[in-house]
Image (tube, rainbow, N blue to C red; front, side, top):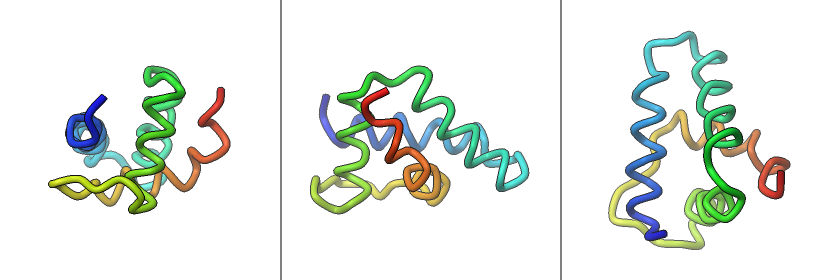
Length: 76
């Protein structure tokens, strides 16, 4: 899947959870990524968040916070 498309989808998830309290929003994004994204998509998202895969748009701050909690869930 193209990196820009993953960024767009991840940012849409973050925008959905943005009105929630910060802790709940981060957990909501993380939970969605674990439950609905396959391991390859999560691995690519980690690569994007780490700056290893360039994209034309940045990841939302909520996605970046959720990704720090996602690292152990890449292969789940």
